[in-house]
Image 1 (tube, rainbow, N blue to C red):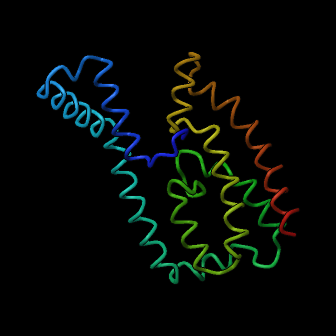
Image 2: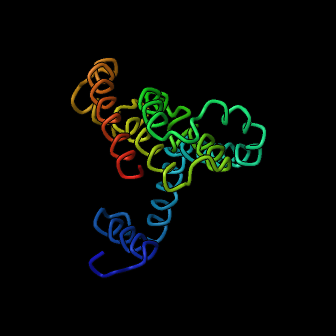
Length: 186
């Protein structure tokens, strides 16, 4: 950031510096083996995430294409002219964002967002903050989030204890944030 470098160039320089500092660049073969081994381990470590993201993109695409099939269902469920009722409903249903559920924009909720967006019930400028608030609920308290898992492990907190204390707190914060969205867009 200091040198305003492109990310790929900065990453390559960082790799070379890391290899030099750790003694992995004493010979060309050792350097190539280091790069190859690191790349293999890195891809293996995130293979589940890569697969999840590929499936998520497919899921989201299919949901958007098939939005017309969901239109009658969602039009009867979603209050189209009462943003306050929608805000309260999403506040109540916010735990559906947990475990990358249907209100988590970065999980199964990607399909929900695609369907809701294509229905044109609400402008995306309103829909995005409403779904983002539910997603923040999950990002803060979901035990499938890597930083939450790391934090629980680091602090030696069991997942049940984390959920017991985190969910009620963030559920309250979610209601407050949903009402902030209502105030801004009302």
